[in-house]
Image 1: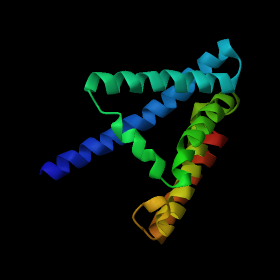
Image 2: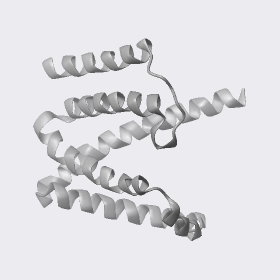
Image 3: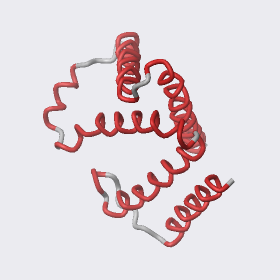
Length: 152
């Protein structure tokens, strides 16, 4: 029973993360009306986020000592921040041109295509989950959703 409850918690957490990312794009779009530079908006977003994380670490008494082990990570592990910056900057550029719904439906479609590849080949150390017809059908349904959102 406990496992079932924790699974629901993590499902709810994932849904709220998706909502937060969507809200972030819309909020950053508002910030861009004043700053008028997607790259500066992305920088401001990351500075504020970095400060929020620092405050959390200090308040929770989480240790920063493990940061020194980062020297041992593979080279590609350093690209997460670059990809995050790309994501935030691009959403600032895309939302006013495509709208929030189309922007995020396209983003999700792109994410789902790459998830199948990453899972299938167990890239970046994730567990291997082979591509199946059902999983490809799920991605196709998402792409159909993108088409419907774009059309209507």
